[in-house]
Image (tube, rainbow, N blue to C red; front, side, top):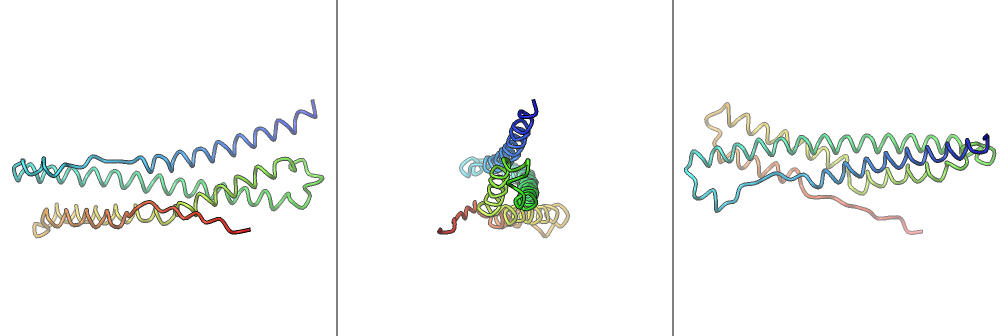
Length: 182
């Protein structure tokens, strides 16, 4: 029975690490699947001016919701991945010196893998900067929407410009994986 206990502990730690990594990958995947409906330009041309304004306002409100969700998910992924990397690194550093005699010696490769995988996800997808871009795009568009609602000199054209600027702030997908040459 005592021989089974270390093997059971190893299985549990591997499962926990894999679940946390899978959760982080799931959040990144959800971020890339975010999509919001945009209006078709040919359909807008057929609408009356009043309906065009309503459609643009709905589009902006929808974009605000999407930007907020994206920012929250990216930041949550960033924090979870970072915390996992730190905890795994501390674990490896703490127990590596006594690895030959330690009951944790079988866990070290898995924990090292989890730490490296977490750090690689953070850096390859540039999660911190992308989360900040989402939040900044949200703030910029929210500011434009509030000005549009409160200030009559801020027109619907200015609101559309603010949305386009927010999209530029949001930017594209960053993937910068460049493993070091051995």
